[in-house]
Length: 395
Image 1 (cartoon, rainbow, N blue to C red):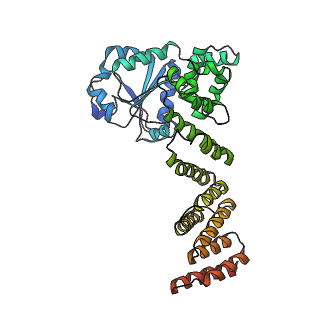
Image 2: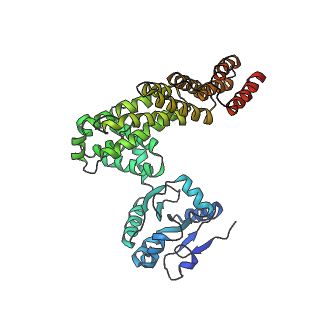
Image 3: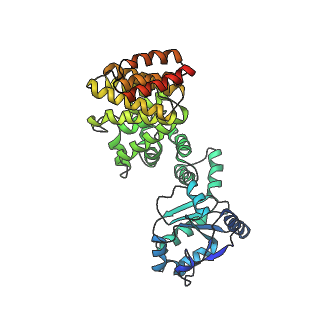
């Protein structure tokens, strides 16, 4: 284990004049020692996550960490710095989403996050946040008790969700928020404070909230001027697509296309491409290809035969190159067959034969190979056919 040492700001090379000192945790064992010290002293934790330079260094150069008020506020804290270039930094980055560095995490001694400040901070910004967090470091526990007793008021709900979101992922936070939203009438949902929660977490297509939001955008924007429909739609699409992929729910995927990717929310001429991209992402991530294949076949039926044949062949080939499950091979075979129907070709017939071979259907593979033999136009094509023929015969 590396020795735990005092870090003045970020690195010793930065300087030795700063008053606010950080313990540097390079690996997990260092971090465990810091955490143990915080618990023994019943301290809060101020964790500075940095990359050794940038705004963290600028804060030092600007004298932020020399501020007497900040140092006074820090007396209630164990202060630790984590460099994302070190093992502990890599571990931390895999757990938390770091959008901007430095990031300052304020936590209680149980590692529960109370607040996060990202990017350059003034001494006053840090001092204010640290003082606020120290007022009630275990507020979350109190709010959970009130939640369990069904005794939360609106402001307490907002605080509970704020703290929950800092410590748990968006899906779980949205699930908790739905409990709050479900307790409100439609009129209440379109007014503050419920409107703020609705616009942030009313994303699930398994609820009425996306339809409510899309139908009442003006009212929602009046209640919450910061509401942006485009940002909401991006979040809703991503949330539901992730859910569809995890649950392998093709109906939910199609619901995204029909309920969220619609005019006038998006330009009409961009809708087919957007919807197809969503179906393709679902197929490639869930490895369930039936929905995507049917949609692609339908789309290409209206295209020029030569262009459609090329598009269908390329997609069938990509699927076979990357997947070998039943759904993928069935879809690829459909695409390859339609490609050959649109414009007969040696490569499409060979791809059909290869897919049949992968499906361990040697008799069908032989039929496709016989068909391909009539399209041979070069010695190289003949060699390729004979190689595949040998594999099929050995099967």
